[in-house]
Amino acid sequence: MIKEIKAFEEISGEISPLFPRIFSAFKYKSGSDNAWVQIDATGQRVSLLSSVDNNFTLIATEKSDFEEIKEFLVFHHFNSVLSNVPLKSTTEKACSLFKFTDIDIQKSNESFLILNSEASLNEYRSFHSLLFYDTDNSFDDWYYNFSKRIVKNDAKAVALKQHEVLLSTATAPMIFENSAIISGVYTLKGFRKKGYSKATIYKLIEELKKDNVTDIYLWCEKEVEEFYNKIGFEIIGNVYIETEL
Image (cartoon, rainbow, N blue to C red; front, side, top):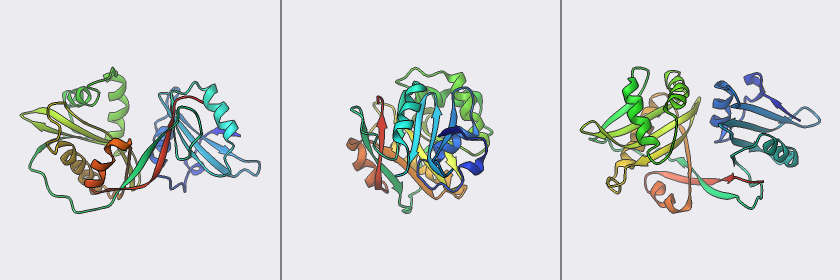
């Protein structure tokens, strides 16, 4: 049976690298954004699911009822599913899962914008414009959700800037206790291969460590694995992305 998560106690104790996504959807649920737990006949938790903008996250176990999960996802008209196990669809894509190895980070001489509780609306607008440079994304919806997480220390965001122009971004939009997931790594075309992404990621990690976040994850496609290996991340497994079932 799959049911909506009503209390944190229903999901506590989970140690998956994907758990910050489940926790974030649970804590900031609104509209179709939500989190669910699958239990077996004995009442034992066997799977966790969440949805943000109909993009689902699945943490499954060997006891998960995958047929029920697939029916649930189809019923909710999912756009994509990020899972810790393959669901064996024809559109499945495997991505490498990385964890930061806690190497010594060299301080950068670059200037950065750090979104925090004192950031202005214009700073958020500038950050959003770069983060979603190649996509159509509503600023109002993003700001409403992301700024709440920033203020409560459930998210962090950093941008490298030169002459007050933002050139590179990195975000940790989902943080739970000592774990965080990095995403939103983007550098403007024309400013790439200059070390800006590396400097921005390192600055973000520096900010995370100030709040005792020690387990820092990300995933990527095969063509950029070498970059993350070189800057201190190591592959610990795979995650799987589905767009059809």
